[in-house]
Image (cartoon, rainbow, N blue to C red; front, side):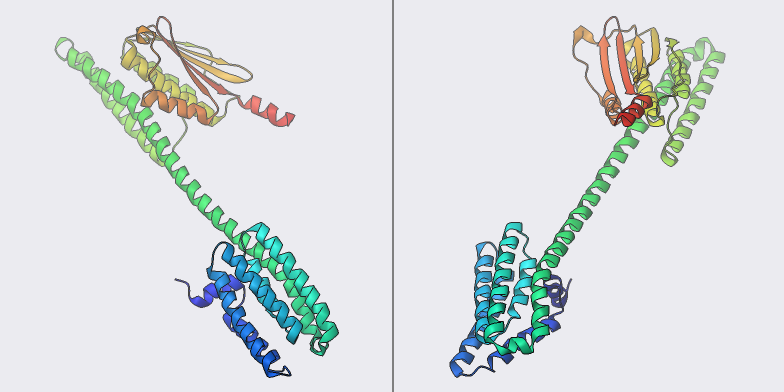
Length: 377
């Protein structure tokens, strides 16, 4: 917790011990007056001034400007009657702490007008101004500069605070996005392997009495797939490596063959104009699309078509299964939703068509298009 000294210094820009000097000075000027009524009136104005000064810091709304107006009036009177200009320094610090820009500019202009006006009058009527010329000159400079410097300093501190809050918020969002990404990666990675393990396990169970040798082969494939899944999970957690399209096509062929679905590849799996992150997204989307074919389509054939163009890459996963029943709109489950979120990250799109089966159309922009746009800019 901050002490009152730290709070005072933050509000005024000076140590409270420095302000004590300014508290004493007005009494020195007042007690040098020629008559008792002037001394009494001077002391009363000093007390009222400091009361208003404190109230202006603790008040809100229109009361702030009311107490400030009284301070300006008392400062002007003290300068005219006793040649005491230093009350304007208090006002300079206080006005600099105002947050409202309009109020700051208005009161700052009034402060300058009253300071210059009363100082000019003091040079004519009060010899003390001549004897204290260096201090008066420095005070006038302080009245000009201190409000602006204090206002800018406070504004910078507020912006710095907002920036820190924004950075914390960004950090939280990045963590949230990273958790969601890891969740999607685990779903895509484990989902495919577990589906393959399930299919091969069912097949091994059916063959265990009919063809034990083939059943053992299927069990070995299950063990191999389980080891691969474990290895991929470890790599995903430790390195978060990207998936290459060529490697993914090999896995797709493997899972489709295990599900007795014929696989056909059209196009080239090498994408020289596509960024690594976009290729990773495409690979994950293909994996999810093929997993859905195995789980839901009841298809016997699946075709993967890769059509790279100058602007983008179009990937189509087509099956001859049951399609979307009764022409209903597709329901975006966790898998399709994850595909759509991934593609949005790289400005890609996802489209589903149902006509004698289902076609998943994945479209991702190429690097070449981005480069051309940068050159044109």
